[in-house]
Length: 200
Image (cartoon, rainbow, N blue to C red):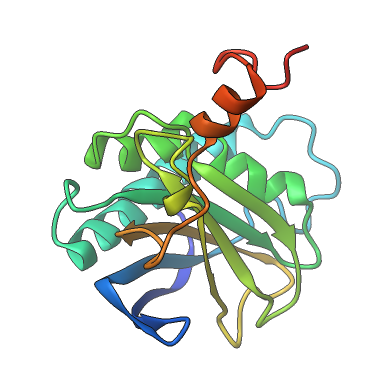
């Protein structure tokens, strides 16, 4: 059984001015989205999701990674990255999670951009034209707040009730006028250790 991809979408957003002030370097956000038939749709409650994860997730990981890298220009240029899934109303949030929370999906992207951080993520369920929210973080430094960003977009006719919309996001640059510091300064000020930020 093949992977049934109905459509893809490439989203590119460039911010030149933020807060009424020109950006020293424009922020460019890229998102690659694919609308796929939910492989568990119409089957009732499926206990073992693994066969479809192994069949579908690698295909989506490879496709979306290729789209992102072509859009950005190279893996080296990607600074922030993340992923998201929106499940149509007849599916479970678990179905979207199944496709993006597997190394068979994420490692395509992680390897292509030489990343160390985990992929920031969002899993939701919604109708066609539901917001697609792709949270981003620095690909090598989870504490670099300048790259805490979110790409928001949508597809007017997706996901249908029996579909899943899967997406990858990338940033070239961080927020144009970042001025809230990084996580490490908070830890230093609080006297907490990086490995135990809540001091528990």
